[in-house]
Length: 228
View: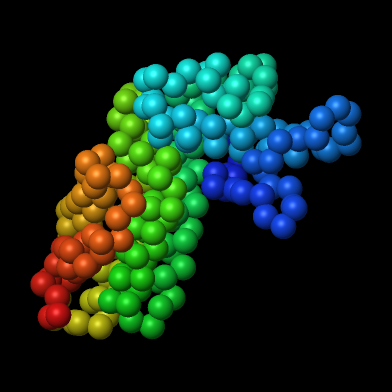
């Protein structure tokens, strides 16, 4: 894949300004090649998200994606080797964007506040992106082993955030035992699968209702049963 960069996969047009996902102007233009590629890539990823979220990974085809994105097949294959490559890029960008938002909460004054605020942000992030939530959380396994490898990278990102919170809790409570890697791994997988189950069974519209239960689960896994 000759061109690779992280781009906001949830870009929209606001205030009349062009974002990466906005179609290029018709006819000749003087935009640099990097801007053209960024626009095409963002539109393809947005189309992949919407189509997979609506009709599933297996039913989505490259012709579907290029038609929805208004990008040529040649441009698609300049950017991605195949449908799976495009889908993995979507998942990678989503994971990067979400992890960046979660890391910001490590600067909160109290680890419990950081954990709850970060969890609320995580749930709201998926709830506000229903197509992406279905594509990533439900359909990703359908994309095969290459996509599973990407999911492991996302687990590692999420795990790094929770590891930091768990260590932070031990600065506050010196009586806590050493944080085990299996506890962090269990926290990552538990939250991911519980959120995925909610999306699969009832859709993402009410994900924020999981906040209290998931908060107590995370505190228990990272620092023992919460006092509240």
